[in-house]
Image 1 (cartoon, rainbow, N blue to C red):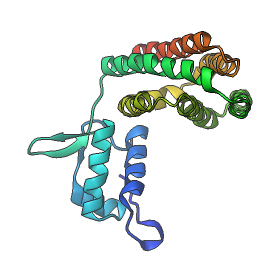
Image 2 (image 1 turned 180 degrees about the vertical axis):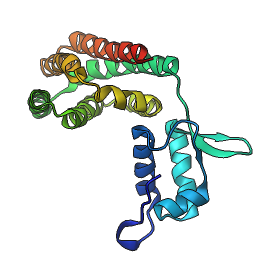
Image 3 (image 1 turned 90 degrees about the vertical axis):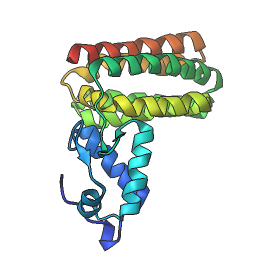
Image 4 (image 1 turned 120 degrees about the horizontal axis):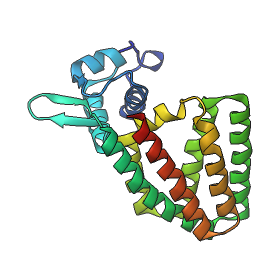
Length: 218
């Protein structure tokens, strides 16, 4: 692990530590099945043992960390098959959210999505996968927020965390943005056009494509 000290010499808060550890897991700095020893993490990240414990508990709820009896915590390993199954469940839930978003979207919200579409097109034209990935996350979050489906949103958040490492890897595959951009644009167009059926179908097809890509990566 890379040494990290608290911001400006202070101890890291539990939410800050959650963000750092989540990022380390997603990017592969912390690898599947790697043990997460509270004392080592406290020293490495400049945090109290109590905040480390809280952070590990939060990440276990997200499905990124698992507790092993008599052995403490470790990075949870998710198989290709499980990641595909998780993404297929997400497809059903996010299709529901897209349907509801198309019913509820305001003109201001639609304008925000259209601007996001332009940013995604620009990122792909420049080959900027980092910016495109960030726009991708914002798009899904915006549609879920507009849908006002709290139960679905909470479930999606947990599911996404468990398969997020695979999606992070996919987002950085050469050519992947060119595949997903038309899918994202179709989602945006359907939602902004207040077309619930088309929005749901566009979201379902997009996430089925993600599931297929994860399956092929194995």
